[in-house]
Amino acid sequence: MCSQVVGLFILGVFLLGRSPSYGQLSATYYDDTCPNVSSIVSGVIQEAFTSDVRIGASLIRLHFHDCFVNGCDGSLLLDNTDTIVSEKDAVPNANSTRGFEVVDSIKTALESSCPGIVSCADILAIAAEASVYMSEGPSWTVLLGRRDGIIANQSGANTALPNPRQNITQLKAVFEAVGLNTTTDLVALSGAHTFGRGACRFFSDRIYNFSGTESPDPSLNSSYLETLSALCPQDGDGTVVANLDPTTPDVFDKNYFSNLQENRGLLQSDQELFSTTGSDTIDIVNLFASNETAFFESFVESMIRMGNISPLTGTEGEIRLDCRKVNNDSSGSADVLVSSI
Image (cartoon, rainbow, N blue to C red; front, side, top):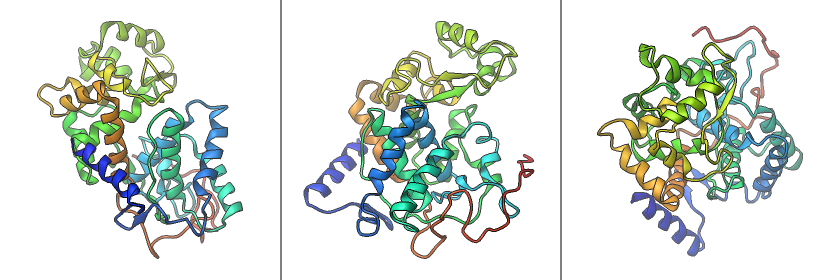
C-alpha cells in the first residue's frame, strides 16, 4: 500500500537524523522559540481527560472541521463579533462541536510559557495527535508553522464539511474539493469515528424514515437497530448521544471498520463506505478491519496531508493572542449573530 511506503519513508527520515517537512511546515518549527509546546498541550489535554472522556474525539474533530474550511487556519475558533460571523454557528458545527474551553486553556498555558509564538491553528494540529495517542492510537511527528486566519467563513462551513447523511458520491466530492484522496484518505480519516459520540438527531432518520421511506435503513444490523431505537425513540430528545463505536467507544483502534462489516455504522456516511455496492472503499474497509497497523499507517499519512490543506505561513495571517478573536478586534462579541442558512 502507498501508506506503507510513506510510513517507511518517514521512519527512514528519522533514522537518518533529519526532521520531516511537508510543504512549508516543519517538525522543528518551535524548537528554538517554544521547545516545550507539545508537552504543554499534552498536559492540558491529559487533565481534561480526567473529567471528560469524550474530549479527545472532540479535539480531533475541531482540527477536521477547521481544515476543511479556509484550510488549517484556526478560523473555526473565532467567536461572533461585529465583524466576524462565526463558523461555530454553521449547521454542521452548531450545538455539535465542543472542546473550545480546552483550546482556551492550552492557549493560556502557551502564552504564559512562550507568549505570542504558537498559533491556534497549530494548537489544533498538536491537540489532534495528542488526543489520538492518549486514546491508544498511533503517534506521529506533527508538522508545524501554521499561522492564524483573520476571517471566518460560515457559508463555507455550511457547504464544505462532510455531512452524516451524505452518500459515497457526495463524500468523495467533499474530500476531492480540499485536495484529499477520495478512497484511502476518505476511509482512513473516517476511522476517527472509532471514538467519540453522535447525537440522535444525526441518525434518527435511519431508524424511522430512511430516505423518506418511513422505514429503517435496510443496511442497519437488526439488533443494532433495536439498540438505537431504545436509545433514540421516535420524536425523542435529539441531543441524546450514542457511541460512534459501540464496541470500544473510547479507544482509538480498528473496531470502527469491523463494525461497518457487521452493518453497525452509526451514521449513514459511515456505513456508506462499506455498504455501497461496487465502491472502491470496500476493500480498504476490509483491509483496515483485518490489519490495525495498516489503518494506523494510513491514518497518520492522511492526517499529515489534511493538516497541510492551505495553511497560512510566513507573514500571512497572524499569531492570535486569544484563539476566539483576531488581534485587532476591539468590537467585542455580538450575541445575536447566528447562521441564516
